[in-house]
Length: 121
Image (cartoon, rainbow, N blue to C red):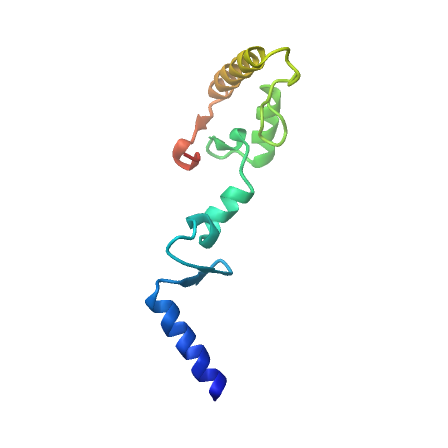
């Protein structure tokens, strides 16, 4: 009985100061949203590759992956240039932008649309 009273008091006090329990953690007013929201936590800890934001009706994951790789992307949804050891940051940035433009064009020609609704801001 004594433990029940202590637990009740703990929950009452935590409710008064704005603490909640979410995603297996005790969350307070200054806790980052991703720490308490399971969906936000999963997006943060397991981000999708940019290629996975391309959508086409009735397209399977295997079909998307095949199209993405044929356009020059990597199977995991990424698209870094093949030579990340570019001689300078500018050379790497230029190669990155060139690859990005090519992938955008290729995926658009295959009938895909980029879904920016879920793109992290």
